[in-house]
Image (cartoon, rainbow, N blue to C red):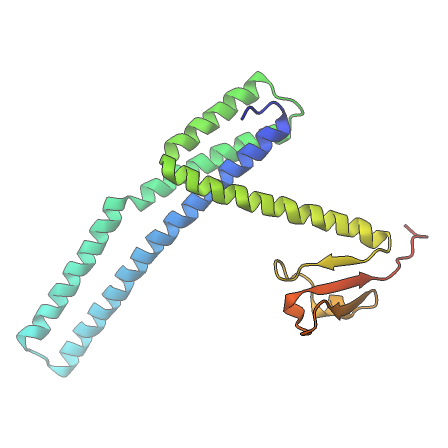
Length: 217
């Protein structure tokens, strides 16, 4: 799809930058999992060595256990090095930084010019070389879904502000974002009542905003 205005470029860059961030987060979780395994195995090995000395264990099985654990730890370390977690995360960080810089420049422009197009194309090239096609598709779908959700709730937020200022009734979906505290519900300007027969506040709360004085606004 052609991007013929600056807003479309900004939204596209936001989605692609978020996709890279999601990929980095996923990669970091995998690296942290392997590192935690190594830490736990090292602690078990060290604790067993201390117990062996204190208890005076001298059997062949006891002597073989630390060797086995050391081999497993070495194997995990080799897997981490083979997968190249640190190198891949560094590439993603550089790509995220580049897309963020281009995004900031686009936000400071009202129209698309040649310099913006050049930097935008460079950012796309960096994205395409940072992730495999299947990974790029998966994280872009997730990024698009997140952005659409953010835009949806942002629009709802501003619409509810306008309704509240007009003294109208608003309905807030507490299943998605429970941002209304008990103090907010019980303060002087908000009344609470349940939207279903079960009386479960988690299933939905309708908030009726009382008339707001407009004289001093």
